[in-house]
Amino acid sequence: MSLFSDRVKYAREKKNLSQKEVAEKIGMSQQGYSNIETGKREPNLETLRILRHILEESLDFFIGYDIEDDLGNELYELYAEARRLRTEAEEDLEYTIDNPEKDLEQRMKTLRQYKEELKSAQIKEEKAFNMFYEHLIKIPGYEEYEVDKQYWVDIYDSYREKDRRIAHDFWEKFNSL
Image (cartoon, rainbow, N blue to C red; front, side, top):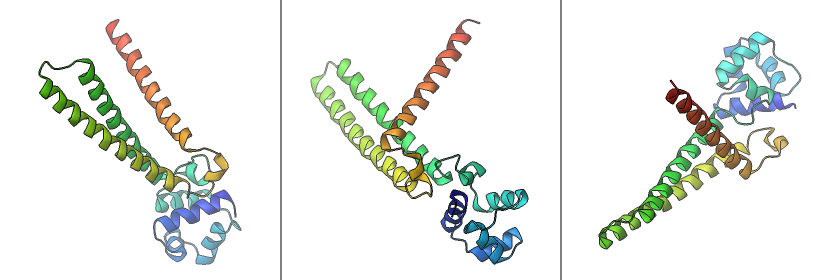
């Protein structure tokens, strides 16, 4: 089987659809559709368009251009949000350490609170990342990309840096008006 046919089958099974159900929605025989999943037949463009719509995945995913599927993208967004919250908790804790309150008792209470928030955020980040990664490694063709967990952490860092640069460039232009 090809990567394309593996991913079509994967997407169909993820949607809990039978070959017969998909074939009926496409308007072809079950055998014809089965031949697509086994790599014996390639769909025409119209069939591919309908198939993409039924299985709710991008054409880039089916042809192997994208590593992750739609669920993988959503899980990555959960990880990114959990990581953002963990970063905020770290910043809150650092700020409190660097800018101590005069009342020692209140300072200790605030530090304990931020420490607990950071611990919780770290656990959520790790769980979200593991959910994403465990899902991703089950996708047909993933092993061909030879990417590990650190790759995805680095991807997040590069997106974050790009966002910072874009925001910085925007404010530089805005301030020069």
